[in-house]
Length: 354
Image (cartoon, rainbow, N blue to C red; front, side):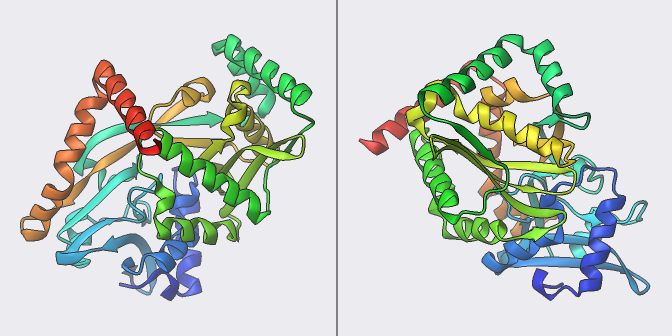
């Protein structure tokens, strides 16, 4: 068991080779650079290395808690999780996790191809995606067919934004730290406005985003995209990019310009720029949202649940996570109740600002 920074370069190369050989999309959350960044801000992060002879054949990045309670890397923040294993490896979840000394292993965005852990999932969710493999023009034609009013309206708002606010400029990979700080401030305000937990109120998440913004590996690069109007930023997104996948993570915009739908305009330009750079898939992540419904071309499943074995650690896992997870699942599957919950959260956000 090693800390991510203790992995030898040969181990990292083997990790990358296993991901390249996988049939799953090469999501940057599953790369060694992401594990290394998490390890620098979460000291309990570990990587289990599975050896066969002299060669590593598997890696399980995770965080270890008290009484052997384990959880997936950056649980609650990372959008794709799981082990990195050689195809056809004859290894069971019980064998791997017992060898790690874990009493439980929780995940909330488990990759679909994780056959080792999917049988232990308690719920399946949709992660919405934009397919630009055949180019941006093809994507626009798909939108024109499935959501003609949305596309026409959004492009009209983009033109109006340029006329009324100022010349538009889009930067796919902005390096200005001030732009990142602006995005984080917008996102914090959005969390509070909607009554949700402010992720940027947690110091380790701030530090993690800062580290990833400086990461420039071929298959894990922090990418800040910004839409400017009249020389000022009005919408931005920070995510991670591999050679084939842009993992969308933290989007937000300046509410003063909400009537122009700058977030939707931003995502269209992100899709166009990603396609131009050979990226074939934008992963919008788990969770329903109107903007995702408008932009998506498909979806892939992700899973939430846990492997547990009898004992105190497993009992603590159940008490700490299962009641809340089941309540969330109950609400999610009842649209009227979910709508009521959303209104309550927004009301709580308004009270908090009062």
